[in-house]
Length: 399
Ligand SMILES: Cc1cc2nc3c(=O)[nH]c(=O)nc-3n(C[C@H](O)[C@H](O)[C@H](O)COP(=O)(O)OP(=O)(O)OC[C@H]3O[C@@H](n4cnc5c(N)ncnc54)[C@H](O)[C@@H]3O)c2cc1C
Image (cartoon, rainbow, N blue to C red; front, side, top):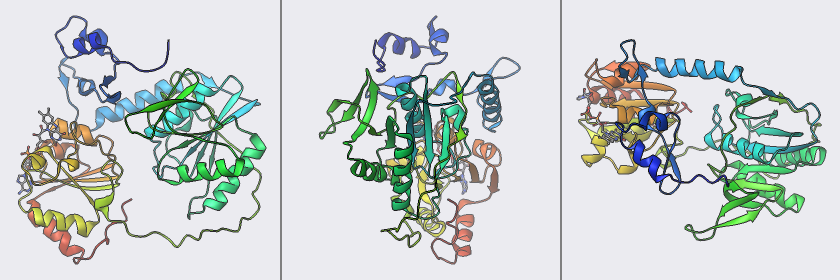
């Protein structure tokens, strides 16, 4: 048996028919694995059973919060994996700047545990401190580097020190355009190791990797340095780890070859919707689209849209948020003239703060929002543009 996830046509057939006698049994904990191997959210998992036994959709976030508490309690009762004197190490390097662990972080930790034996400690190195629970994601040891300024030479020196102190069996990095991909290549050159890149799925001791042609892939034997992508392995389940801090010897001062001159303004329109921290999203309640674009620019927000706004031709399809659009993860999501249909809410469940601007005080978006403005969209957007004096970026320190 291999670990590769495969489609099950019979199961899919049953899951498409909620009246099928085996539907409930199959739907308990399934993930829809659609063609192309992509896992999708199961919309039927949404909602909760009310006291009357009727399935209801929670728009207040209370059920999500309760589910979070229940998950925490369940995690606390899981067995603790303890490694006192590790025989060897696998190091996972996370370059994400989010306070929460990303899907890729959890997949990388999952891969590390697939490669680890009983005495192996999985070390997680973070560039930024994490609010998320590293123990439930599978970090036996954790270390946070100082990422106040961009300093690849110092970070590389720390990784080299860790390599000489711990001699890890494997280093696992995200194969992306952020710091991790670059650091992995620097480390590989300095150690004289040939890395494996674009690792897509781990099975049978080999990594299935992307080939030169996007439609092709190739199985590779493992190397000490692995650069991987999302879904390379499943996150850990059924145990928690210690996540104790890793002590590393002081690294002697490194003379940096790169000087960080500080941040530069980025055009919010260039940030992918799924990654941006601040979204101004427009729906059918927008009366003046030119003003909407002006407002997004004045606030320094990335533009999103409801499906109706897209279907009506006001916004490109790439901006659609929701079940059939993009799942977003913004720190602040401002919904202007969007009613809050369940298909839209599904795409923004993980947004930290939701601000709704709508003329209908009873609409579902207002129920979901942390802050509501009951007013005409054009009036408020004009006031926001005026408040920023037409200048760009005055309110753009959200992220
Ligand atoms: C299979 C399927 C998949 C779907 N997937 C998605 C999806 O991925 N994303 C998505 O968004 N939708 C999706 N939909 C559509 C979804 O059901 C809703 O129809 C859509 O989200 C509604 O868009 P809206 O809120 O912009 O428009 P409406 O429902 O028309 O709401 C407009 C809102 O604007 C308010 N408003 C009106 N005038 C003003 C004003 N002057 N100032 C302020 N507010 C005002 C109204 O009170 C109302 O709340 C899907 C539907 C189906 C069937």
